[in-house]
Amino acid sequence: MAFFDSLLAHPNTEIHSVMVVRHGKVVGEMYPKPFNAEYKHTQFSCSKTFVAAAVGIAISEKRLRLDDRLVTFFPQQLPKVVSWNLASITIEDLLTMRSGYVVDTKMRERSRQWIRDYLAHPMNGRPGKLFQYDSIDTYLLSAIVQQVTGMTVLEYLRQRVFSYMNIRDVMWELSPEGIVTGGWGLYVQAESLAKFGQLLLQRGQWHGRQLIPASWVDAMTSAQVHNEGDDYGYQMWMCNYPTAVRAAGAYGQYIVVVPKQDVVVVINQCTLSGAAVQLKHIWQNS
Image (cartoon, rainbow, N blue to C red; front, side, top):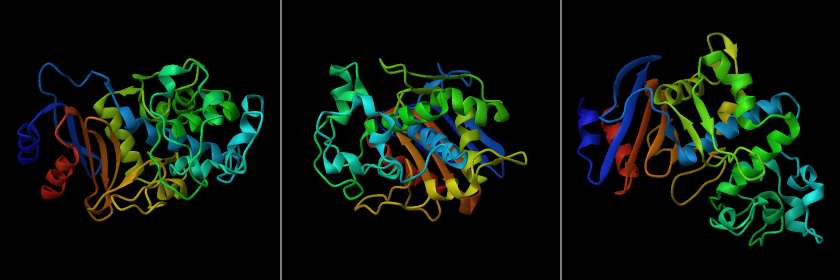
């Protein structure tokens, strides 16, 4: 209750849903009116973590490798001149936001051929070196998963993960190319988010079935890139609190996984006052 009160008191914030799970059980949840448990909520960049899970499953099925090159998946959409930097981008570079592309958040508003236009997009660094948070990196991962599986990321996760977890009410936006947007656009209920967080907490195991390889969950939730701010794994952020990691989306969407306390915390909201401050409320009540 202290934690819920602290969130509701946060300035310039509208809380939509909160769920706290400990030892695999829901110990608290709230849905301030007019929101309720049945509502799907847009996840913004929390969507990225689901794409990383799909990539890991595809790798375990030998459809992909971390060192596969981006250009090999889209030979018909490459620019006339393929630079050394473009030819060098790997799956791992996309997972860790180190593709080397100049970030352009408006490209998807101007174009209807996102893959072609981003393959021709300017680069400002050598792949694997410079961390630049870019949702199109995740979109390209989504496109690659669709290329190698014949399914969208959502269809693939429904078949490999969601069907075993009774996660049914899910929607994901599509690009003009008919590809799941990947880096954003996922709509899902708070309970389903909490289930997914619990799946990560359990290193990919659900009711005795290994849905995501444990080694892949370990990689997702470990620091792959060291930053001045929070370190980054595979489409997940590391937290200052010991062992804690998070999926994070714009305006304060969170899946926070805290193995040390065997806790998962999910928050959906609209905050304009710095959502990172709210993480401190979680640590204070852990």
